[in-house]
Length: 214
Image 1 (cartoon, one colour):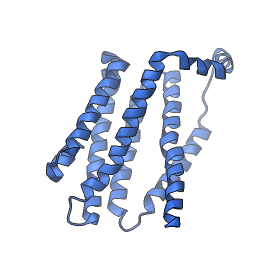
Image 2 (cartoon, helix red, strand yellow):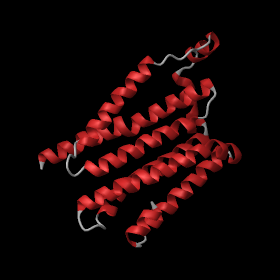
Image 3 (tube, one colour):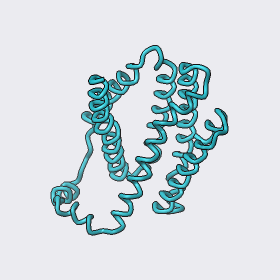
């Protein structure tokens, strides 16, 4: 029992700092590079979704025979990504360097006075965390609808791969969609879509119904 709680504590710290926070930092970094070199961030994120689809398929297929495979693959992937970041050189002009050096912590704290910033923060917090919780629980919920856990895990890996491939297709269209609707309405529509998916998954419609909602 003590080993379980120790593992849960260390696993929570690992997932929170490395996975959730780390993904946000990397996404923010790539977004800044896309702005610097004037290309659409959504198209870069599309390749990340393809990687996610491949990972979901591999882990879903082999998780029963080797549960540690996901952690080893993730560790290898982040080492490769770190090497890519280290070897990437961003060319900055003198004006950009001066603008960056002029930024202070007080400038960031001024955002606390902005009501729209707090609304965005609350929206992001609730939407992201609620959907992450749903996404984590759905795997077990979907797997339990099959005769054996092994078969359920295998089919969930296939389902997750198909889902992420669909996301990749939509990410190709996202730059056009966001530019047409604006960032605010794009966020609202995304939140509504996530809500429909969560509610749809809660309706007992069997394996096919759950898969369609996902």
